[in-house]
Length: 261
Length: 271
Image (cartoon, rainbow over all chains, first blue to last red; front, side):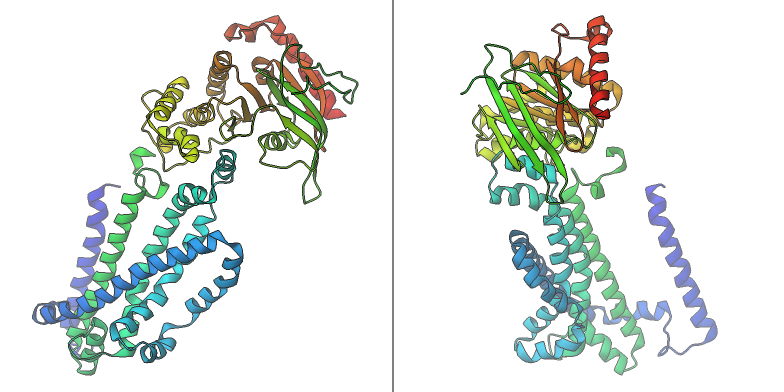
């Protein structure tokens, strides 16, 4: 499959669907507050663009901060788990509990407990985002090749050397796969937290703009905000995918190009 | 160090030749047994003495505990009973180990993989790098110093693994069916390369294999093992002339020895 076709095919499908949508709305006369046509949404993107971009930055800041915190804390927790099996079996169930409890249900509590709005939202997004990193990295750290472990022992490697030279590199692809999942989850977490917190004023995130547009029946703006959120999610995924490819390009199956295999 | 390990009478009445006179024994196993937690008896009452510079093959069917024996010698597994005495100090790098899989770090280049023993020892200067590069050249991988394992063929990866085992210039080299997963052509080539390396450096080699032909071609002595539990059924000196090469495989001595070892192995497996 040629590279250009791989890009052109989905783009063509997208254009056809947009054209059908546009034609359907125009021909059926569905009111704009039920379903706006793509052209209405595009118009709204232009008109409300600057203010929506400001809101996007607010949401993006929370998302990226939560993702960074998830990577750091999640990676650190996994390292501690890998050093002590007892710690792992003692604490892992609680990480699972934190993961399976719906964030919508605990967000109000967090917003009461954490006074700074930014930190409260960050905490919510972090809770959603950290688990895939902990769980993936823990598996990765425990997946070191048994014969390589024996070899390290034979050459008298310290616990620290085994961790740093063998377990951590083995875990890197697992960590990066977790990070790609967490990137999307951090955005979802940030949006959900904003829905619950509903912060108004100067620091208004994109989620609140969606709520607000809904209340005002400014449906094209709602779609425009939604569009920006989707694009942001895709960009975060692509950026993390690129990072993963760069870090693994020399050795991991997932990052090898066809000629190298 | 005590003298050569006196050979005990083996079952089947085959008398094991003792280590040749004048050769210092480098390894002695006395009554070594291994029973796993699962209750599986992998090895029973192994007595074996290995002289310095010998190339000893452990030949037997799969499941006869050959690999377990090798791991006990390397100190990676403790025997359930008996003693394993090594005349080399167990300092890191005095023993080299080659597994059935190349067991390379995929994130490291060929040179970095070969440097691993030095890196672990905290010595990774220019001298060590020079030794690593020399080891890479010695196994015929000049030009691939900076390649990653995924860029190499199976045989080349195994060469890297051998270079890593040789780089510390070990007294004892343990090879656990290193060529079993390779194709015939590569395997014969690596057999010859291993012989040349052994002739040049004369490390003591313990070579685990299930191939009669390979064991006769390579070794100076063959310990034939029987399975469940693993025992040494026979201990045979290989009197095929040295140095060996392509012509050896066609020689009558080689054919005769292969036949003798095959018969012994068949008896050991029937027993």
